[in-house]
Image 1: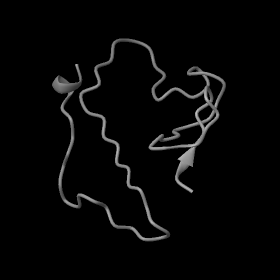
Image 2: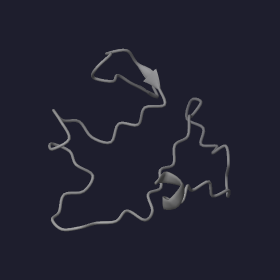
Image 3: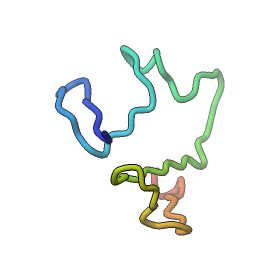
Image 4: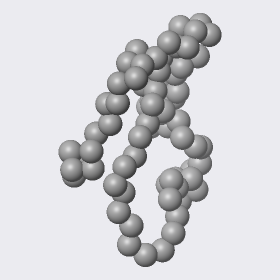
Length: 71
């Protein structure tokens, strides 16, 4: 249905992307390794869908934020 319930507020909200479910960050890390790491690029695509239609709002447009913008 496009909504997810944040654990703190328990109210469904649109726009929250559930990556995994667990008790805390150690249960479901995005990366687990040892040593220094540098995240140079991280892309996420989300589209709100009406029914079963697939129609991205910005097809072909790269709206990637650079690592410098995120720092």
